[in-house]
Length: 218
Image (cartoon, rainbow, N blue to C red; front, top):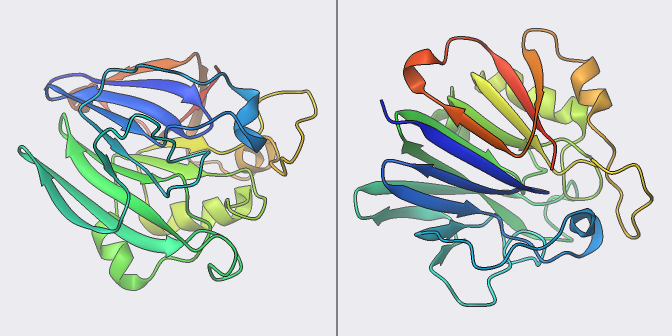
């Protein structure tokens, strides 16, 4: 199987490369909690998958090909499934809906819940259950799961690899940011190994045997 390469830019922005395709996830403008990271320009990609059109996860100033609305889409031989979940813990009254994305790349089932903070329905569970890789928010605040809420989702979905997003990685105070760090999440999960890495990860589905949480440090 071909390698899957994940490169983190911070917040919930990743470039995922595999099967001859490059997918950019949740590009951000450096505002609010995303201001702890530098903006990245001119990233080569085939398409963008975004949780919403908010500046910290759907920043697309060049009007590149971007999928943001829920639905099923086909790009060449790639099938993208987007489902709608509340973007905040106020039943979507403040930030509306976020799109959770799932697709297959390099023999990995990938689920990106970077913009979700609401409950998932039984029907949603059928679509996104048992992913090989789950991106999930853990930092709390108005539009992100807390560490304990993320654990409830993980118990339902039973992913092999967990990649936390939307949490505080800087020790400095950040204006207009209500994120916590990863401590609460890590302290309450036991069945996964935890590995701290840099900003890039290479995976091979044939060698993916352990349950692991990868904490990216940018």
